[in-house]
Amino acid sequence: MYDYTGKTVLVTGASMGLGEGFAHGFAEAGADLILTARSVDLLEGVAEVCRSKGSGKVTVVPGDVSVEADVARVVETGITAHGRIDALINNAGVSDMRGVAPEQFDMETWNWIMSVDLNGAFMYLRDVGRHMLESGGGSIVNICSIMGHGANELNIIAYTAAKGALRNVTLQLGCEWADRGVRVNSVSPGFIITEMVRPALEGMGMDKWIASRTPMRRIGELHEIVDPVMFLASDGASYITGHDLNVDGGTNASNGTYQIPPIHQEWNADTAPRIGRGYEGVQPRPDWYEVMKAGIPGIHYTPES
Image (tube, helix red, strand yellow):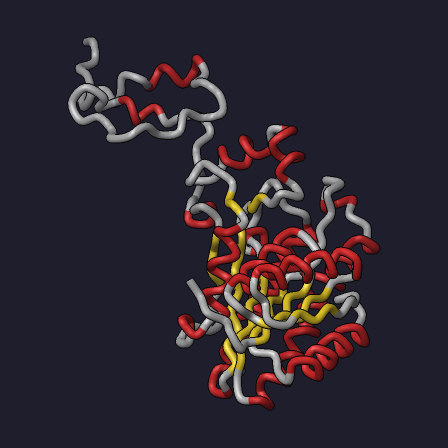
């Protein structure tokens, strides 16, 4: 869908997961790549695949996104090797899977998440943004999250704070740099499955539970986040800046998505039935729900006098 031949793309957090998917996608589109993460061995493996997929030149620069000197070194090394950076995919991020309640959340974990998901993202924005402003333009795509848009029973307090802040930074810089040729946008993924996490999610049944609260009733696949990111980074999005794109199967468009099928869906089954098979829910309707099955008295049936 895209041609990135002659363009250089820097991907942070490129050693696995979404970052690896972004690297592969841009490689298939012919981009030259600068790949960074902490693990040089994993990065080299990703780089080898990217070269086989068509990337002209791949430079691996290991570094810690939370360390300012590392960020500066990665950017400088990438510019020296490639001459310029045309697009930044600001992807590196961490979370906390312990399920600790906010009132028990420790500051060590809070600061760790902030150092990567917000501070590290900003340092890459600042350093790459400065280069793009000096060279006459570029495109930056931040990887935010639907968890940064509002409350969610799956959320982690530090993660929602960091991703919500990064979304606002996206809007601010998207406007501040717009007249100087640098576009800044973001995507907010819902739950996206990668081969790294697929066995765990499917094995535990989490995929079905997540799907039950998503309007599209499924988890997103990797290519469904890679393509929107590549679009926002491309010249096809040349008049888009300061925009956050939800890629979440409709989750954030919904005020609530049923897990028990709504009873009103059967009220007009005989006279005006719904077309197509809807979601059956994660559990059958409970007994107390059946009292509404006949519909509204006086509209769907004549109440007994």
